[in-house]
Every structure is written in C-alpha cells, then in structure tokens.
Length: 158
Image (cartoon, rainbow, N blue to C red; front, top):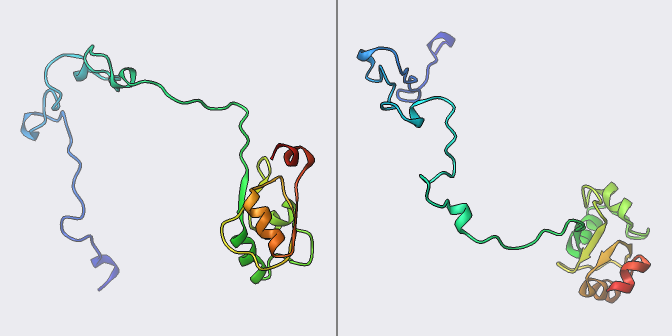
C-alpha cells in the first residue's frame, strides 16, 4: 500500500445534501421547508413552544431550593488516606493538614475546606487537622491511635 492509495472504506463518508440548487436536486425551490409559514423562514426559535398550549416547562411544578451561601467541601475518605500513606505520598509521622493533602494530591483544591469521611479503613495513627469530619470518621481515626483536630466553630456545631 502506498500513501496515495489510502482512502476511506466504502460508505464511511456521505456527501452533504445541497438544498435549494434547482429542481433536479430533489431538494430544489423550497429546500424541503414547505410553503410559507414561520418555519419556512430563517431565524426561527420555537424551542419549548407548543402551538399556544401551555408548555411542559410551565405545566410542571417548580420544587426545591438552592441555598445561596452553601459551602462546598473537598471530600477525603479514610481509605484514600491509607492508600496515599502506603504509596509514600503522605507522611504518616507528620501532621496531616489541608495544605499537606493538596500537596500530596489527595484533593485537587480545598474549596471551602476539607471534610473527612469514614469510607474505607485506616491503619496508620494520624494527627489530622481539617475543616470538618463525620463522627464515624473521628471514631475510626481515634481507634487507629490518631487524633482529629477541627476548628472551634465547626466542633461546637457538630
């Protein structure tokens, strides 16, 4: 095979249908748009319009609420911490802070803080300082011989 012999498989490419190019093309004159009316003209925006009937998006009830000052936390599971410690990316002897987690690549960015959750198993004794933690995560860390430090405001709320 030579470079000039390379071509697509049969049926891989289809020629574009050229509309409004005379009666012999099969799509001449009105170009498949029919005669007159809004849809035959350019600049038509009919999304969600149902011919005067009440559109679906207005018939269905609106539900829920989005809290305008909601905080979003970066989530870290105990199992993830153990994997990073085993891989040598996280130092078990030093304090595990939010900045250390970002530097090790456990979380991409802190967002409004880092929250510790209890999924997975932790074997190493760690001193962890994070913005938030679930009760079961705190218990699991203490059971492994470590300690979880939370900011005063968060600790009082939980």
